[in-house]
Image 1 (cartoon, rainbow, N blue to C red):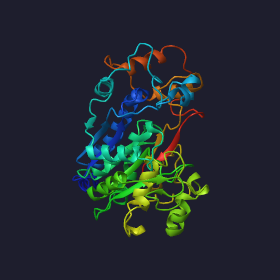
Image 2 (image 1 turned 90 degrees about the vertical axis):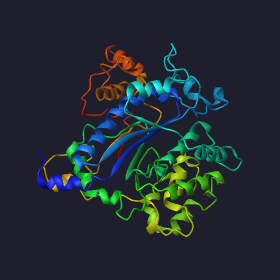
Image 3 (image 1 turned 60 degrees about the horizontal axis):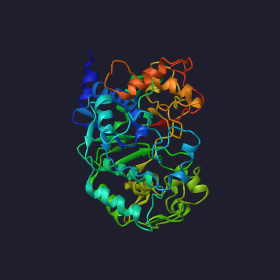
Image 4 (image 1 turned 180 degrees about the vertical axis):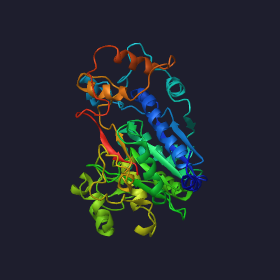
Length: 409
């Protein structure tokens, strides 16, 4: 039974709704990511509902069939020539020999069997049109056309019925088994109003990586905003981009850092800043666009009212990565909530000779039994019983192709 103080604490969250959102453009390479993603997203949803006491937490997906393969795939698809199974830019990169993951309705079937609680959203036609205009005009971006639908992530900014939205790509494990659930719960309880400002202003928290100040695969948005969403549509609809000055030709990375010195810490270790270029991974697409909109864009905006914010700097010993020592102290409760992001071209739901340890770890944390209607569960069960996978410690991820541990909060 919850104590009186815990009940009072939960009541402060009772009027809030949370969404855990993702998107999928129907490309077969991601079909077998849905089962694992859904299970760990649901575990995090339970933290918000049962741990914090929010009114509800929904799993949302923007599912479209807008994926665009590269036209000259025979020249560009080196991954296929190398025998790789993960190749979303190339037709046929991940299709099984019997065609079980092909066909116009397969994506909805995968979601229905592997994540029935997932709510599918329809794409705003204006966002589709704005994206198409930006990506097809001569001065636009997303030059690798298979990446263009990543701009549909802007959809979550319009979800004003929710107080908090966590956007996570399908290659993200949102609640790592190594991180105790009660510490994640306490982290959110103590820092909720930093992620969801009481004044209703939008707040975005995200980590960067060696390429970009804003990794577009995992970010947290407090207080979604229709006004901000509309600003983004305008930017895309009339948007131009180039390698030197980025979106709307608004400035070079170093010019922005000089204009807003508070951004330097976020930018300085990235390829973007070191090379003073917007030509970085997805820099002309979602990662560059999100950084531009959340941190740079807008008429006469001051840094104080921009949605983008930095995580607080962890004190010594508070990173808690990749494991945490549970001592029951307040220090433990301040450990950041971190997810595992399986980025890069090696995906743990694609079995390859140099990827077997990662696949074994992935399957150890995926419940694929008792799902007769799931193509991917059947595939995982076959792998697990084939003798191809090494013995592993489920709580010790493999050292190779392990993705990145990335902060959520």
